[in-house]
Length: 329
Image 1 (tube, rainbow, N blue to C red):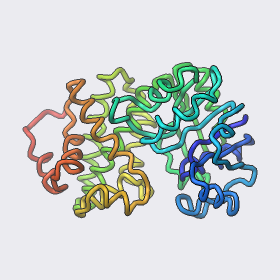
Image 2 (tube, rainbow, N blue to C red; image 1 turned 120 degrees about the vertical axis):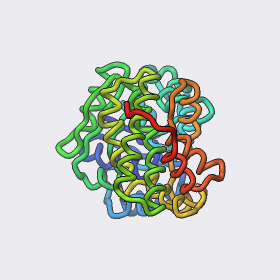
Image 3 (cartoon, helix red, strand yellow; image 1 turned 180 degrees about the vertical axis):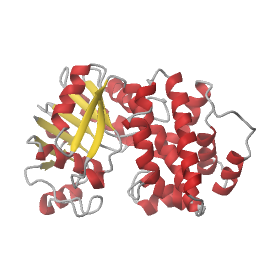
Image 4 (cartoon, rainbow, N blue to C red; image 1 turned 90 degrees about the vertical axis):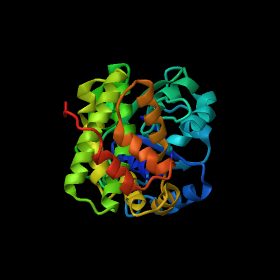
C-alpha cells in the first residue's frame, strides 16, 4: 500500500518503520523542516526516538498535499490538540472513501468529541478508523512484541488495517466499537497522571494498584454510559493501555504525573518531559463528560483539582482516601 504518516514524532516514526518493514511505500510528513532534514540525513528521530534506525525506503516531506494524495491509507499521528487543525488542512486533498487511521489519543476539550469524530466532522468523505492499545513507540520501533486493536465502524475496514500493520512482532485484533477504543485510550492518560503523582509522593505498589483498579472502574462507568462495550473497555485499548501507561518508564503521562507529585506545575512537568502530555488535555473533557452522563469519577475530579485548581497532589490523595464509605460494586 501507499501510506502517508502525518506526524514525525516518536509514534509516527515507529509506525512508519513498522509499515515499511511490512513492505508498504511510506511517506512521513512534518511541518518542521529541520525535523525532516534530520530524518533524511540520519534515518533516525534523534530527539524523540533515539537509537531506532528507520527503514531507508521511507520518504519524507513537509508538503501536506504530497503526503496524502493518492495514498491508500493515511495515518494521523499528530498530537491530539492538533488533530482538528491538521484535518482541516488535508481535507481539500482527500478523496471519497480514502482511509484515515487515527493513532493519537485524546478527547477534544472544546467539543467533547473523540478524535475519530473530529476527523469525520472535518473530512466527511473519508473512511475514518482508529488503532490503539498498549504500544509505546520506544518498543514498537524496536520490534518488541506488541498487541493492539484496529477499530472501524465497518469490520472490513478494520481488517484492512489489521492486514497492513500486522506481522510476527505486531499483532492486531479488530473491533467495531470505535467509541470504546477511543474513550479507553483517552481517559487512561488521566488515570496515569494520578498513578505518576502517587509515585512522586513516594507511595507504593498498593497505591498504584488501587488507582489503576478504581480508575478502570471510572473508565468503565463512563464508557458504558456512552454506549461502549464492556469487552472493549476490559481489553487492549482499555485495561491493557491503562496498565502500560500507569507503569512504564516510557509513559509521558506517568512521568509528568511523577513530577507533579513532586511539586511541579503541569506546565513545568510538560516542559521537562519534552512531549505533549495527552492526559492534561483530556482531563477537563473527561470531567465534563462525567457530569454530562451523571457518572461518578473521583480520580478524574482529583486530577483536575491538581492540574487546574491549585490543589496539591498530597491533598488530592487525602481527598480520595477519605471519601464516604461505599460498596465496591
